[in-house]
Length: 286
Ligand code: PMP
Image 1 (cartoon, protein in one colour):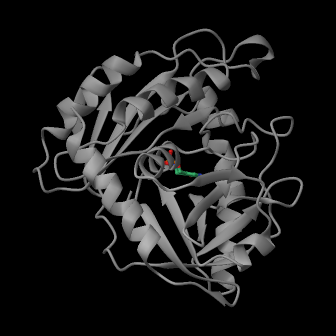
Image 2 (cartoon, rainbow, N blue to C red):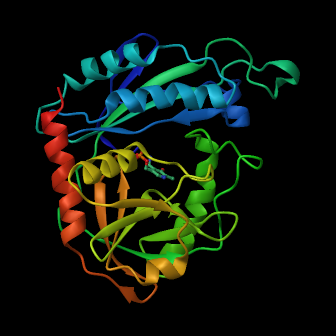
């Protein structure tokens, strides 16, 4: 592990550092039954932590695993672990489940409670002027009949890794990814939005991509601030006619896109508004 100041919750308590959790015979090690979620602690706040904990359990259930802690317990455990960090630390919060016992013919994960751990690690926020450039990739988001896209499952991410590898080889930071029909789904590691003539557009969830918690928060914040947000079928050509494009996810909240395959964008007003609205909302949350 390369992270800084790692702490691990495992088998009922917090441990200093990165501790081994999976065993050689665990279903997760053998057949890849792992799910995770990612939340963030920044400036003493953990925005939407409850939603991330709830999604962790839904992901486990989508892979036929039995969650061993409730979302409420998980949230309390996370806060307990975060108390060990200074308030100014930026911490990535990663709860995970994995299959321990094999069930019928071993391929199914079995009814025994899934293995559970939480990894905390200091990961700084990107500077406010950080941007990303995007290209296309030939790798697509699968549909539910091909893969468990209704879960945040570890086994989906090798596909995202090859999207990123392809983009990096071409000199780009990330890829704009198509769904099975060839419309824009998301980026390899984040959701995507575009702004045109003062209105905001983002791909409508169609079951192929992760409709992120941060994405939903930004949509709600923008609408509450009077901005028209369209969830729509968007093509790559739509993105070529945008004024502004930005990526969203729990880790960096919003990252302006400077370029998509030669099309340059303003880095500006809407992405700043989204960021400001996000932190205003986070600070005012009870
Ligand atoms: N899509 C993918 C593939 C991701 O890995 C992430 C990061 N979790 C997102 C979208 C953004 O989701 P969220 O806002 O829930 O973090």
